[in-house]
Amino acid sequence: MSDQIKFIVDSLNKEPFKKNYNLITFDSLGPMQLLQVLNDVLAEIDPKQDVDIREEMPEQTAKRMLNLLGILKYKPPGNATDMSTFRQGLVIGSKPVIYPVLHWLLQRSNELKKRAYLARFLIKLEVPSEFLQDETVADTNKQYEELMEAFKTLHKECEQLKTSGFSTAEIRRDISAMEEEKDQLMKRVERLKKRVETVQNHQRMLKIARQLRVEKE
Image 1 (spheres, rainbow, N blue to C red):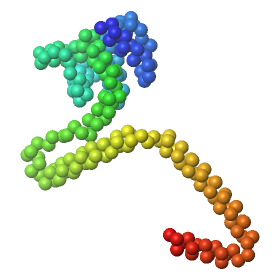
Image 2 (image 1 turned 180 degrees about the vertical axis):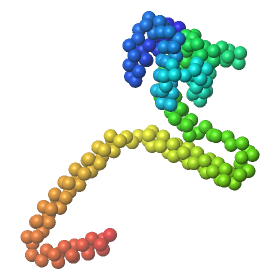
Image 3 (image 1 turned 45 degrees about the vertical axis):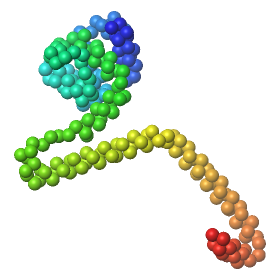
Image 4 (image 1 turned 90 degrees about the vertical axis):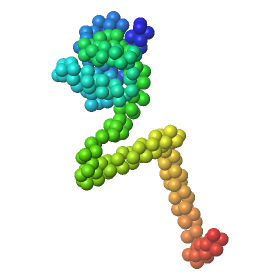
């Protein structure tokens, strides 16, 4: 447990939380303060969770947190009987319940941010079959499913581009190098033009040279 708390404290003291805890001050937090810390971590993963829990009823806070933890696929230890204990622990801000949740969230925050983002678009809204008898509702639902599939495809392509080895910085460097090379070539062309212009019948000779190039191509 001490290693777990140390990891939580170290993580909370870093970006983006920038808390100023030590093991003693963190372990001395009251239930409401601890719940707010948990909520702050959840809000970093999903900005929609950014609320002041003092403005919510305890049951509402627990329901909201449980919903997000379910989306993030957090599995509390124990069986179905312990699930009610877990829920109650969230309501009252119990350390044995909240510490493991914080530890789990802070260990994989980047992965969970992606999961929370995708959930906004990929958790399907189930429309009751009786409503689908209406033609307008059925058409709208079909468009909704098609958009969801399009999002999956685009997101997959985006992820492939991110891991393809190309980076924005590398592309910018390549563009700068090509622009510099282009400037050098233009200057060289200008110098050659001036040299050619001093030759008699240079226009006729240029025309013949162009015809020769075309024939070779």
